[in-house]
Amino acid sequence: MGKPRVKPALSPEALEIVAQRFRALGDPTRLALLQALFARERTVQDLCGVAGSSQANTSKHLALLLACGLVARRRVGVHVYYRIADASLEQLCRLVCGSLAERHASVRASLAGLAS
Image (tube, rainbow, N blue to C red; front, side, top):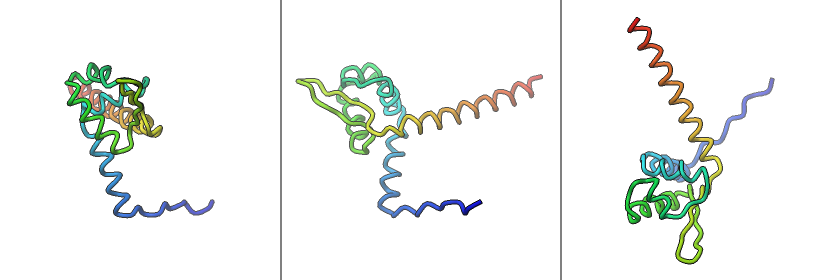
């Protein structure tokens, strides 16, 4: 077998960009918006219903996601449509959610064993 490939270390600037993206993903409202966008492109008005918040608040969250490169937008007349801009984002969310589901299943099984 050959040597495992070692990825080069990221520069401090690149690490800051990664950290910004993870901070953007650290808010439940923004995660709900992204989850809705995995299904299809949506308008800000559609996303207000998903987020359960005002247009101003939803737009603020979308602006942050846009600045981080996680979503993209396009304007059609008076409507602005948002979509996922980073295809790897859905895979990342599936990985994290799958890990969380496994963790909760393990905890439930442990608690069930204690109750017996």
